[in-house]
Length: 200
Image (cartoon, rainbow, N blue to C red; front, side, top):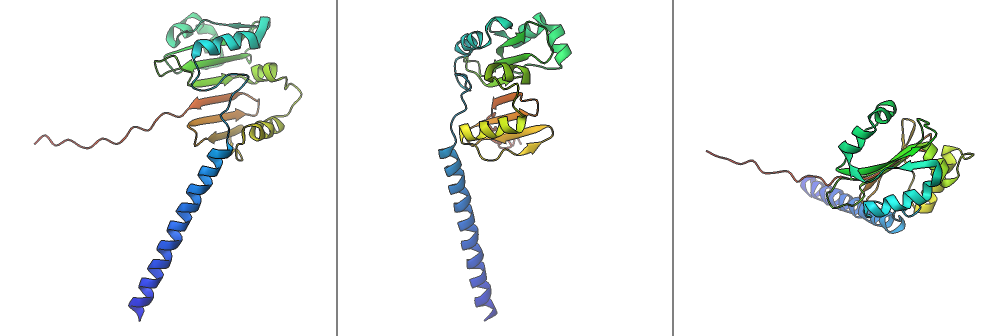
């Protein structure tokens, strides 16, 4: 009798576990179906970096400078003082920088490509650049995030210290800070675990 109850209990647990996994997988598929690719004024992860630069030149106009697309280390060496003051570092093989011509420390952005084929892997706008491009000077960050979420079909964005962060099943990570700075980067593919090699 006890053995039979134990088997029935085990089967019930197995069915519940499989049902929960199926429901979780279905929920993730639903999020993927609803979520749209994030395209900000024509800029997106995976686009050509030179095309992204042309778009940024048009978006920022005369009040901002947009550097040429260069090797990231070369770009940072040209503008060492700027990077030092802002305590930022560009990670990637190549990229370009956008700076406010007035020299405001909060006025900058950059776009990076690190996969070696000229495709954008990260887009960063400071809060000042976000306000300039999207005309959101008078908009509070909470409202900005809510509208951003609605526009791209995103679920609730989890709160982090001074901002929100979301890791998408579409392969990118989005961070929006309370100053409205936006950072979108492609998730790095996980490296498969390699087997141990026995040499003896």
